[in-house]
Image (cartoon, rainbow, N blue to C red; front, side, top):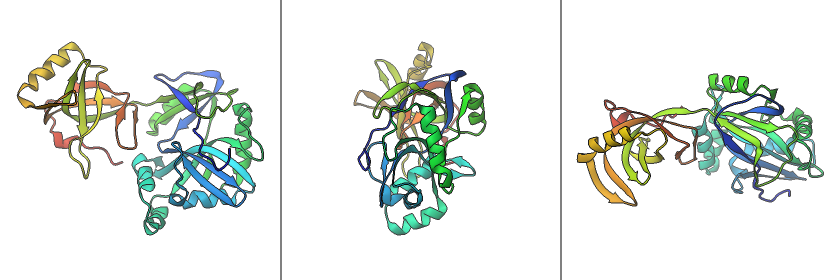
Length: 303
C-alpha cells in the first residue's frame, strides 16, 4: 500500500445539509486531494489521480519526514490560504510550477498546508477500522505536525450549523462522514456525502445545443478571452429558450460539434457547485439573462 498510487475514497453529492448523530461533519477545503506516504527515509506525495508531486511541495515533504513514525499514509487536502481562506487558484499555481527557483519563492508567497482527514496505514493498515478510531489515531499522529500537517476540524451531528458557518467564511462546503464508515480505496461511498455551497457567476453565452437545449457559457481570463467553461440546462424554461433564440438569431457564427456558436454578446448569471482545475464549471443552474451586461465584464474572479 505504501509508496504506490492509491485512488482515494470519495463522497457522493447531495444538495442540502442535514443533522444526524451518526455522522461527523467536516469543512470541505478548496484545494487538491493528496495522499502523503512515508516509509523509512522515503517520503512521496501523490495526487488523487496518482501523479507524484513530491518535488513541487517541499514544505509538505519536510513536515512528513519530521513525523516521529517510521511508516504512515495520510489522506487529506493540500490548500493555500490567503487572508485565512483557501484559494483554489493559488493551489493550482503551486501544482503548475516546476522550476526549483519558482518553487523556493512560492514557499514564501503561496505556502501549502495539509488538512489531514484520514490515516490509512502506519505500521499496519487501518482501512477496516471505523472512522472515529482512525480520527483519534490521526490526532495523536499529528500532535507534532508543526501547523503544516494539521487534522481537519470535525463536529458531531450538527451538519446544518457547520454548513452555515462555512458559507459565512466563504468555504466550499461540508462533508458528512458516517462514524462507523470503513475506508474503501477507489470507492464513491454513500457513507461520505459532500454538500457544496452554490456559487454565483456572470458568464458570456457562446452558443447553444438543441437536444436537450442547453447554453454553452464562457468567461474572460487573463490570457484567454471567451473561454468555454461549461454548459447549463437546469433552470432554463421554454420561455427562456425562446427569448434566447430570438435574441441570438442575428448572432449565429457557425454550427460545429453539435453547438450553434454565436458572437459573444449576450450574458447570463448562473450558479455552480463544482469546477475542475481547468475552470470547467459543473452542477450548473441558469438564474437569469443579463441583457445590459457587457461580455468583457464576465471575468473569472482571481480571489
